[in-house]
Image 1 (cartoon, rainbow, N blue to C red):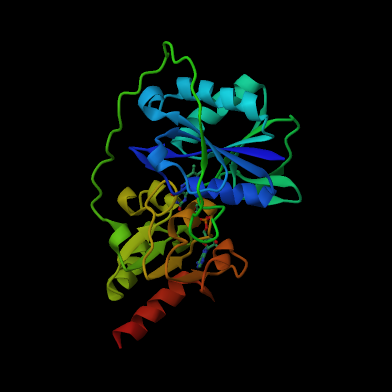
Image 2: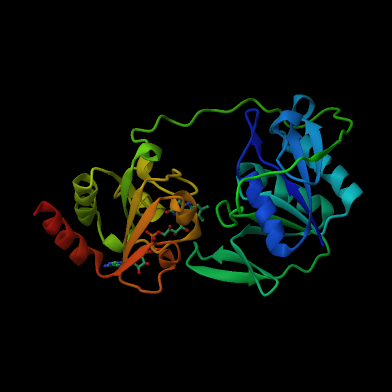
Length: 305
Ligand SMILES: Cc1cc2nc3c(=O)[nH]c(=O)nc-3n(C[C@H](O)[C@H](O)[C@H](O)COP(=O)(O)OP(=O)(O)OC[C@H]3O[C@@H](n4cnc5c(N)ncnc54)[C@H](O)[C@@H]3O)c2cc1C
């Protein structure tokens, strides 16, 4: 079984998420071949073959040309799996490649069980096991779901790849910086985050009070932000901020993979949840099984003493 892993490269740099592709291929016990549209200096640290297409010629983000490059390498390598990160780059390119190959696509994989791919469904409330039927399959993996073991190491065997660039139907204009964040949660040493389990907007103040008492910042899950209980700049997760405070307190948070992806590198994680089987327990150092709106006021009273 062979996996062609598509590297993530942006603004002249290889993104760390590239190494999650290697970790995923290890889970599949697949032979690994990588493909980077970038520069040789940014090639991944990996003892194996890396196809390199020059981003000076093909651009950093040109789905039209990149698709043609990928198909060229697919012709050479005949991989069983073509694997992308579930990122804006992967979202754009994976379906183009799958359609061109008439291959099945499985998106947003968070695990592999019994030889099947585990993906979230119903807004991540449920998980499905999926088994594609086509011989070649295009996959996207959720960032944060497959952690590399140890530091990346190795020397790639670079093989240049080129195609007749010709005219492209896509022109890459440039990157646009996101609006400036009011709060930079990435710098906070303590974050206390509110999840849907806090119940209502008025209760968020209790969570914010604990954040203040611990000298930290308030964070939140996406549903809490979507409901307008907390501003978007405080969202933690794959579509919010990635944080690594010394202490992370998760209040009424289930532990969906998209949230975990943003906070699992925290030094010490305390979760308060009334469900002892909540998935947040898998990453928490301490899981307090309690009603958050009873536990936090009691904790605040203790801290005041
Ligand atoms: C493309 C995409 C991107 C996403 N990006 C993000 C992201 O960046 N960040 C993010 O957070 N989510 C993100 N999500 C949403 C994510 O899938 C989950 O839906 C979300 O994280 C769940 O938030 P929650 O834990 O607050 O709510 P829920 O999943 O509803 O969990 C609430 C938890 O509170 C507990 N609870 C209920 N009442 C109490 C109580 N009284 N006391 C104690 N515990 C209680 C429950 O047992 C439950 O575990 C994304 C989803 C998609 C599809």
